[in-house]
Every structure is written in C-alpha cells, then in structure tokens.
Image (spheres, rainbow, N blue to C red):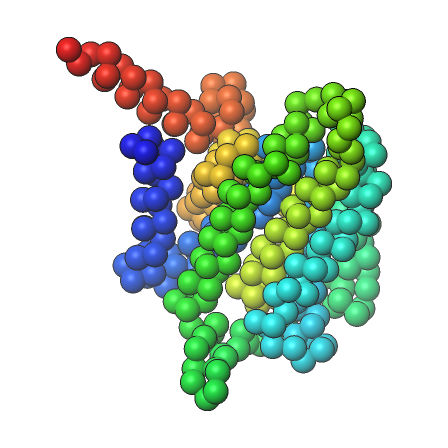
Length: 322
C-alpha cells in the first residue's frame, strides 16, 4: 500500500478537494477545464488503453453530449442539472449506432470509420440552423436548485460548480476502476490482446467491444455536458477531428491503460496551451516536439514511466539496506 501508485492519486484527490479554497478564480476555472478534459481522456482510454481500439471520432460523442444539454436548455426549457442523464444517453445512442458498424472492422479501418462518422456529425451540426450553425448555442445560466425550499446547489457559484464537476468525475473514475477489474473488463482487455482467441473459446468479442464503445461514448457525453455547462456554450468545434486527435495525444503523453495517465495527459496539454499560448500562437509546435520526445524517450507515457522509476528506486533502497 506504500506504492506511489496509491499514494500519488490519494494525494492528488486531497489537493483537488482543498484547491478551490486556496487558488484564485482564474486557476479554479483552469482546474475545472483540466478535470473535464481528463474525464474525456479517461472515456477514450477504455477503448485505446484496454481494448486497443483506436478511435479518431471520439469527439463526436463529446459534442453530442454538449449539444444535447445546450438544446434541451435553450429550446426545451429544461434546467441544466436535469439534462445530465439525457446528455449521457444521447451520446450512448450515437455511440451504439457508430459502434454497430465500427466494431466489425479492426485496425486502420476502425480508425477511418470512426473518423468518417465523426465528420458526418460535425457537418450535420455545423450546417443546421436548429443547432445554431457555426455560431453554436449560447447558455445564459447554470441555475440554482433547492429541495423543499432549501437551497442545495447553485451551479452559478464557481466553487459549487467545481465540486459538482469533481463529484461526477470521481464517480466515473470509481466506475471505471470497478469495470476494468470486473470479468467484463478482463474480456475487454482480452480483445486488445487477441480477439480471435476469445472467439475460439466462446466469447462474442464484437458484443463486448460494442458495449465498451457505448460506455466510452457515454463518458464522453458526460464530459461534453460539463464542458458546455462550464463554457456556457456549445459549438461545432467540439465534434471536430482535431479534438479527437487532441484526446489521443493526451493518452500518448500521460500513458494509456491507466487511470492516472489520461489525467496527467490532460494536465500537460492544458497547461501547455494556457501558459505557452499566452506567449505564442504557435504553441502546438512545442506540443509536437514534446510528443516526439515522449514517443522516443518516454514510451508508454509519463505516468507509467514515473511509476516504474519510483518502483526501481524503492527496490534499490531495499537492496541497499543490510
């Protein structure tokens, strides 16, 4: 239990809980953005890190979750809080439609099918007057909520909104933790290792792959809901392939197949964009250099590299003791 694999996430959670009481509103806003992007990266990691299904269209479900909430609030008059399940459901339905065809392919064909559907959703949203076209949908407020006349949640309060986001993300991480270690999760990992062998012993790998695809889509939809609520708007760029590529880069930098790696990747990219982007509009050039260095020197991503080095230091310390 003294392994850094447990100590570092526990320490990070403690920091996240006390963070809004210690930092400025700007840095709290930045932390919210990092948390939401971390959730998005975690949802994709279920496919990439475990089932080895590389999707270049994951942003479509992110955008669908955002637009579902925005349109329900703007045109349906639903309070933003009550749009959570519908945003997740909308993304899961879209993922089921895409995944039904995508899981019948593999490798580069899977990548291309997910990309094609993502672009189809992008242009559908971009060219529709119902969704606001290229201007998107703007929200006016997040809303405050009470129970029997007692105020219980005010999402327009940044600190309360921060804890709302943190609670949903913590719940999703706990869900993934249990899911990955369940028999279902082990079969999903088996798909990544050798899908034909699974088929040979009686498992329907396509059904498991589709289920994982839908769950990942639901996680992306939840991230989209939170992102639109945070930014108070939804626009077509949320569905673009550039966003999908950015999520994949988060996994490469942080490390796929872990619960910490995608979070670390989201931290790296967001901080690089926020701080380096204030000095130059070409910050992605430096992101490209970082990506190349990580691929060549830090294979597996930052978190597996850090954990491995910490374990080596611990082992050497144990061997050095008499």
